[in-house]
Amino acid sequence: MRDILPPDSALWNRVEQTARSVFESFGFGEIRLPILEPQDLFARSVGADTDIVSKEMFTLDLQALEDVRRLLDDLISSTDRPVRFTGWLYELRQALKAAWETERIDQTESNRKAIDRLDAIYAQLFTAIADDNVVRESMEHPQKHPEIFDLIQDAMFNAVRMRVLPETAVLRPEATASVCRAYIEHGMHVLPGDAKLYYLGPMFRRERPQKGRYRQFYQIGAEVLGASDNARIDADVLEMLSMFLERLQLSGAKLYLNSIGHNAPNCRPAYVEKLRHALRAVRDQLGADSQRRIETNPLRVLDSKLPEEQRVIESLPRIADHLCAECREHFRQLQEQLTLRGIAYELNWRLVRGLDYYMRTTFEITATGLGSQDAICGGGRYDGLVELLGGPPTKGIGFAIGTDRLILSLQEAKKDASAAGLDVFIVWMGAAAFLAAVKVARRLRWAGLHVEVPAEEMKFRKSLSLADRLRTRYAVIIGEDEVASGAFSVKKLADGTQQTFGEEELVEYLRANRG
Ligand code: HAM
Image 1: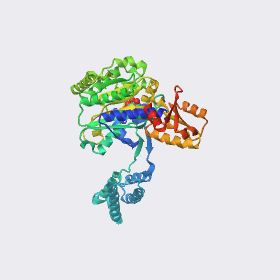
Image 2: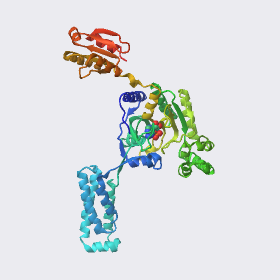
Image 3: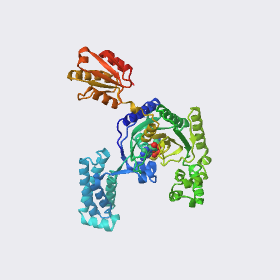
Image 4: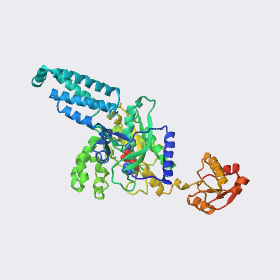
């Protein structure tokens, strides 16, 4: 975790502003997503066995329903004992009502119905067990009183349906899953055209911090969701990315591209088996992590950065030689589109990405000046993810830029526009001059200039020295004489030249000469 301070924050704003303007010119609109999401959203999409989900999530256990959860456990353990069950049901019903009133349980129509139903079941069970014979019989000969066990089942169903089972929220580690969740929740598939959405904001992963790797980091991302998986969409997304980086004048960025096929027997799974087979044959030349991955996720072996494994990995079978005909054609079309649009790329058959939802196109962009954490952007196609999360069949592609790393790379390359400082520092002496200073400052600020008026009166030299240290371009000097004559001096701090203007001309001059 770290703070971002001025003047760095000015560069952050410029980068984010550029993203908004470029993405909007491609027809994307901003989606603002919650930072807390249910844990299982990421387990189901990014993948329960990935590093992100299995090791790096910041989890918030929502303790609010602890009492309800405990009672539910008691209830579940007594389904074969009608009397005890009815007692626990009474307790649960009370706890649920209290939770409802204090809004620890969402006050939705379906939750209200479930609580009402539990009330009705409790009343029926209570009446039934008032008759000892019925209870004894239902224990010893359940077939004689199936209605009691039906009621118990009904009660269990309604208790569980209220979603009061353990509920855990996490700080989102990424936003593609959230975008898909929102796409489903808001029925965006019925909107005209593709849903083209971008987002900016913090993400959280409990990784070992180092340069370019933080536990709270920021992403600028974009996703296209819709009916078509045409490779032209992949190319559009990559063209948008390349225009964004060009606008920022980031030099030395490299786009790496791959296709990892899709999940059909004649495509990626067949390749994964071949790879596993080949890996088993060289098992003793690999480190412990890679050895384990041979069985769990052989594709991830290709990600290895261990120097001693590189030679072995280079000799493994490559996915490009094992894609099915459709995936091969999709990849060919994408490359054709990129060439037509003049977008440079390099193929990298080892680019498999560490999230489970990808298929076909995967890509990464690296930048200079970052050391080992040099990926500033990752993305790819994820057809089927929306469906996996309970939505309609949908194609998807997108990317996320690591803003922290992009900024670091821009700063290393000295493309830092945040060094600009102030436009105008107003040096004033005397109470009347202060009022004139405030008035002039207001007019200049309306014109969009960055203006500083010190609140405390300062000696002339001290004022100019502060203006200099704030990297100001012009000092406007207002003393009692200037107020009386209505003529203000402007000093250009870079070369010390000085001119005098009336208020109107002063505003005009500074406006025309802004940085
Ligand atoms: P990702 O590769 O996990 O992909 O992250 C994208 C980018 O976020 C990385 O390339 C990197 O620049 C930055 N990043 C990741 N972790 C950290 C960290 N701990 N500190 C600083 N920067 C970091 C995704 O998140 C996918 N959701 C991208 C995507 C969107 N795919 C399709 N649509």
